[in-house]
Each structure stands twice: as structure tokens, then as C-alpha cells.
Length: 245
Ligand SMILES: C[S@@+](CC[C@H](N)C(=O)[O-])C[C@H]1O[C@@H](n2cnc3c(N)ncnc32)[C@H](O)[C@@H]1O
Image (tube, rainbow, N blue to C red):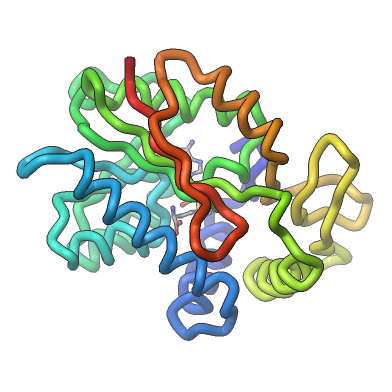
């Protein structure tokens, strides 16, 4: 997985811990985003989907979104390419399956969904090339006029305090060892939080885009048209809805 922690087990363990952190409210900032994301997804599903329409979360991980929305009565499933996550979700009776978003979409999944969604901590953890593959995967999964929901961080609203909180959060989640470190980076082209090994090689990142960069990137997504963009209550993430055209 380019741009992502390559060791699946480690990813799983790290994110299980992050799920716990979210659950137990150790990071207020992330709690705020989690609630905002859920509200955004629930509002968008109500707005764009009708009874019986299928909704899928791409890269559902431990199933935090699928679980909450399924509990709220939405017909939602998820997929991931990490079998440990799939097993974890299935144990909780969540409707999940294996699919790799950067590979060809199987025929039986094409055009199946009215809504596909990608969370903030998924899309912007990948390099641009892989992001484009995720978007084209979403396009294939959606039926005509289907809606892609994406939540993404916006750099303009990040305060120093928020950055410090996010660094602390990821230090907890990723628990770097062997000289690896988690830090904030801003080299003008990219900004975010990353995990580097002791030689400075980037092993993982979570980045955010300026409003202009975000607009440029959205404009490059072929076959999808932005129909709404909402700054979420937390103030540092956008909820986007794009229609398949
Ligand atoms: C940061 S986690 C987010 C999990 C979940 N969306 C959430 O917000 O709690 C990103 C997820 O994407 C999954 N993932 C990474 N690459 C993938 C790929 N190529 N296809 C499908 N899932 C992938 C990872 O296994 C991980 O579960």
C-alpha cells in the first residue's frame, strides 16, 4: 500500500487503538470531527438516497462509521483491503467485504451503489496517484447520478493548537519505535502530520490541502461534479458531495 504503513498487522493494531481513543474521548478534537463526519454522512444519505438504495464506505477499517450509521437505520456496507479489519467488522455483524480500491472493480460491484463515501482520514493518507485510483474506483461503484461523499481536511482552519493535538493523537495511535517519529511538516507543497523512520524516510502521512489545491484536485476527478461543499462544525474539514455524471 503506497503511502500507508505497509505492515497490515501494525496498521490494524494502530487503528484499533485509535478506535479506542475515539470511543473514550481522549482527543476532543477528533471526537468533534467524528461526530461532524457522522452528521454529514447521515444528512447526505437522507438527502440523496431513497429507501432501498445501497450505501458503501470505502476503506471502512474498524467499521466506526458503518456501525453508527447501521445502528441509525441506514442500509450501509463497507469494504477494506485489510482482512483483519474485515474479520473484526464481521464479528460485530457489520456488512463488510474485501475489495482493493486501487485495483480493478469486480463486475458484480460495478454501478451498485447510490452513495459511496470516503472519510477524511482515508483519502488524504494516500499519495495523489493512489487518491486518483480511489476516486476512479468510487466512480465505478456508483450507479448513474450516484453520489460520492468525501470528507477532507482543510489547511486554512488549522490552528497551532489543533496541529499540536493532532500530533499528540497520532503519537498515541502510531506509537513510533526504533527511532521513528511523528511530526508536523509543511514544505509549502504539502502540509500535515507524518511518521518517519530514523533516516527520515516517510512511512505514513495524513495531509491536508489548501482550499486552492483542494479545488484543483476535485476539478481533476473525471466523471464527477461537485454538488455541495460544507465546512463541518469543527472548522477544519469539508464535507463534499459529488455527483456521477
Ligand atoms: C485510516 S483508516 C480509516 C478507517 C475508517 N474509514 C474510519 O474512518 O474509521 C483507512 C482504511 O483504508 C484501508 N485501505 C487502505 N488501502 C486500501 C485499499 N487499497 N483498498 C481498500 N481499503 C484500503 C485501510 O486498511 C484502513 O482500514
